[in-house]
Image (tube, rainbow, N blue to C red; front, side, top):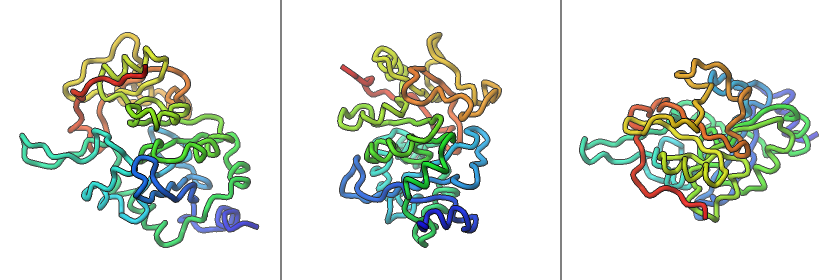
Length: 266
């Protein structure tokens, strides 16, 4: 009997996950990252996503909150505009990411450091996960992880969601088979739509409003939370839907439209 099966069937509540991958980041290969799946036994209580298997992409040797301050989070988040940045006008640091890493991700990283998560046994995982739903990159960008990990992760699932900010780099675009383009501007969303790719655009304080060809996220507060993500699954990287949502989460007040040149998929 594998250790994974033992902790899944008989372990305590802290052993609700396993290590999917530990090794070099595809974004920053000199930094080791770790991917931990949670929800294998106790379903996620996230009220927006519903009971999705959650995957947390973390710097292996640096606590998530520390990695944000040091900038080492670039290994799992790349150049995402929602990372911590200096606001020269207001003379302060700001972070528009919706993930409050000081809670779940810090706790998961600490549990990993304490040896609470066994390495994945894919055969056992296939049995447990068959018919379930998953989320690529609850925190961290799925493009930082070898695509084979995600191939194995989604194989038994009935559906998934995922997002990537790395679409500007052709080397990292293979993850688009499972992920929406994270559109940092209306131009990004337009380029994605033209290329037949699904996108997900966050409406910041200076963003153009939802366009007629875009779909308001049905799990959002502004849409009345009519469904949860596990019921919707439009953000699966293959549907081609262009979704918008109002800025939300712990950093929502700092979200703004990017002024860089739009993505190109030629």
